[in-house]
Amino acid sequence: MNDTINISRLNFEKLGELYKHADNVLIENETIEDINCYWFKNKGDHSTGKLLLYLHGGCFVLGSLQSHQALVSHLSKNLMLPVLFVEYRLAPENPFPAAVIDITKVYQHLLSRYPGCDIVLMGDSAGAGLAISVLSKINEMDIHAPKYLIMLSPWIDLACTNQSLITNAAIDPILTKEQLEKFVSFYVNDKTVSAANPIETMYGPAPPTLIIVGSNEILLDDSKLICNKIAEQQTKVELNIYEGQNHVWMLEDINTEASKKALKEIQEFIAA
Image (cartoon, rainbow, N blue to C red; front, side, top):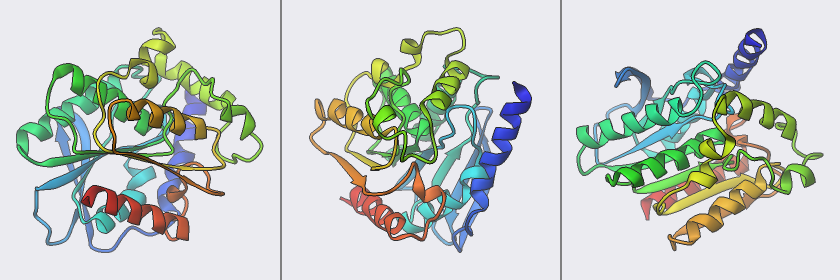
């Protein structure tokens, strides 16, 4: 099993080499609460009025700075924000709730370090699911919530029962239901799926939320599900479905019209 996972991790990291990093964005390593993190900062920008906390995808098992650094550099440049990228602990070596604990610690550190700063919480795929789990912890702890929540192609329901897992199976070139179920088993380990499932454990309201997803995704219905759930307590929630796009398409090419449109959409949403 370990050899298979290691090969998958190495292949996933190649996503970070598909296009160039954004110009004039510096990457600085920092250990926060014993967790490996990376700051993405635009040269000459020292503002701490708003920052973005980014949670990478990879089905809770894959992903690192290497896989996401190109994408995150362009997010930092286009949004003109410092971005903190968290290398949370991965399953199966560190199953649920390790990642949620790590991210929550980093979030609390940011609140203490930058009081009054507006934090944008953002994640793609499983990272978006982790964002929901962390947000639930934040609400349970009754601490200051993020200003905005941004989710790209979110994986929200680890029970894998949504209809699009079947109806979009033939047009999704990235994910399969069988793959997701395998990764869920790595993530939950000896816990139940319900205990780790972001949609089942969601607690309290979400901040203003933007959800971006492709029409080709088997996880399309996850976006619809979480949009409806958030809308029960938050009036400002947007779900934008990009026709013909695949799972987290901005990782593959940041320069397509769909990627440029999504970047602009995020920029406008958090500026409102």
